[in-house]
Image (cartoon, rainbow, N blue to C red):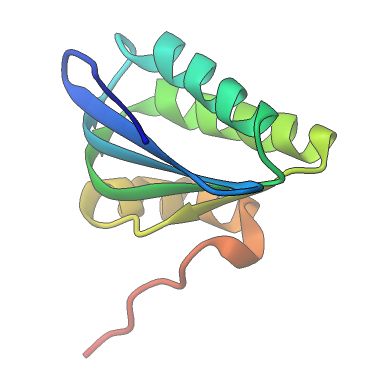
Length: 115
């Protein structure tokens, strides 16, 4: 497992045979998108399946949305299955409102049901 800390966010990658789980936590804004972009490209290059676990992520801005869309296209071009998992709170709302959860298709966890 690889672990790293950025100014306002953290990440770690769990490595399997042909699967990587990239777990993000904290707050990512424009100051962290260059590293996030590099990290996503590196992870996509190493596996046939990449899951981005957003459970610990509490804030993203529009620059992160752009990076996620770019990563989706990069993964599709390489034949890599890229999914988003466990988005909650503000992160889930912005991903739903912008249609990015739908862009990631079947792997994206379903919206919460009303009680």
